Length: 224
Image (cartoon, rainbow, N blue to C red; front, side, top):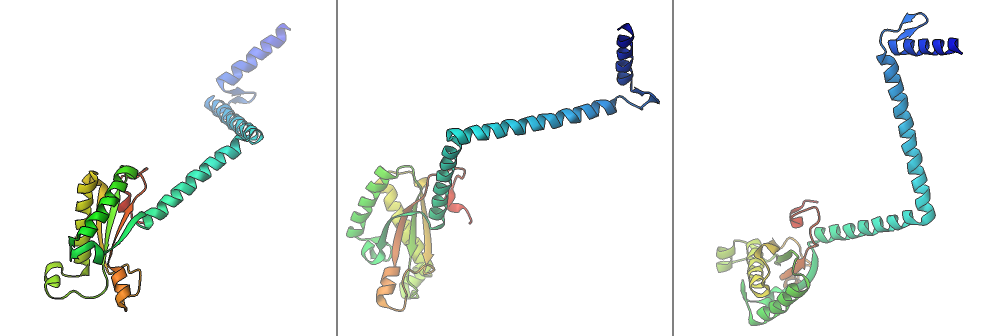
């Protein structure tokens, strides 16, 4: 027994000192590195086994499927919000310019009444949303005083969007920073401009609300 203990001590000392039967191996660091690598592999295998057991438990209890449904619901919601952002937001109203304005960019009494109803809706239903006001025009070129004042249909649509935005700010008591005014001119027609009815329908103001911000601060400025 004493001989075995002596031999064991000698072997351990040889390993620690970096010796072999043929002499020193150069450095004990080689042995330490090998043991550390083996330890790392065993730890990785242990983590993989724990993850596998956890996944199996989640399958058995139904937790996996519940989490999967939750993630799918979030993905569907984000997809819906991206579509809304690409389309300019969720429409609240689309107002014909001919009935909204008494003059090129001066609101009529009936137009103000319609904006009052929209302002109440914004105040009660969407108090924390970004409101987007779009001005649209037909393709008929401006002439005379209109051309001198606005330059083009683009300028006219911007002026109308700004007029509606300013009135909604005053009527709704929402913060000015919640509003965005955009003028598209004749670039987004809904109907053909080759008929009087089509041109009349294309002269419009569209009011939308954007989804609540998530990881973005001003979603309407994102480029898709």
